[in-house]
Image 1 (cartoon, rainbow, N blue to C red):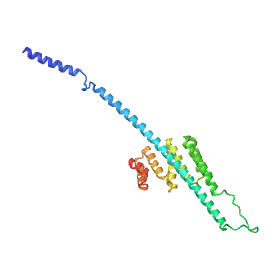
Image 2 (cartoon, rainbow, N blue to C red):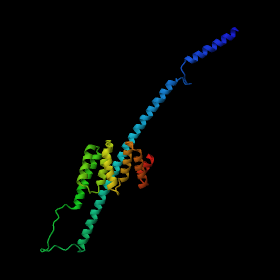
Image 3 (cartoon, rainbow, N blue to C red):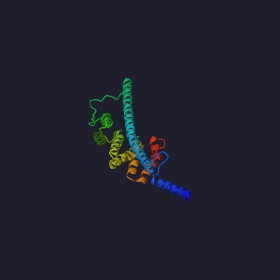
Length: 241
């Protein structure tokens, strides 16, 4: 009988000791320590994700700048080639004697006080390149002003759509979504052949998404996918959808 009481007492004391001790894993860590470690891991992962998202946004912006620079140089090359063709054709006409007849003293002469279109376009090219150089130099406030001045001074230039696009990009970067939306919409509505149109539609979708307009954002992403199915922007739109 005495032996039985001793066994029961020992079992009771052992159970009490286990109940009083904190719950630990085989490695010796308590449950609270494990939860704290998991929370720290989740916090660290979230921080890394935020940094990666910011890096992706910066990379997208830099890629856009490179594309704009390539387009600028390509357009300038096309203009140089066009001027060379005009020069060769003029030389050929002169050599073959097919130039325009000289004006006789009695014939009236007309003067055109307006600046030649080619000269205007060259001036516009210089102005656009100056604005784009400010953008590449990350002088963003001055670049916004320069693109705005360009749009005002050269509304019919071949670079007008690009100027609206970069103006919108700079406003988007500043989180001025209302102004960015207006400029992106200009590219979409007024320049159907612009190389920046697909990206402008996509950015309108991003703005709608940031403003909590999920249905409107989806409409823009669907539009990019349908109108520009083979573009790289369409792949981004598919990812959003």
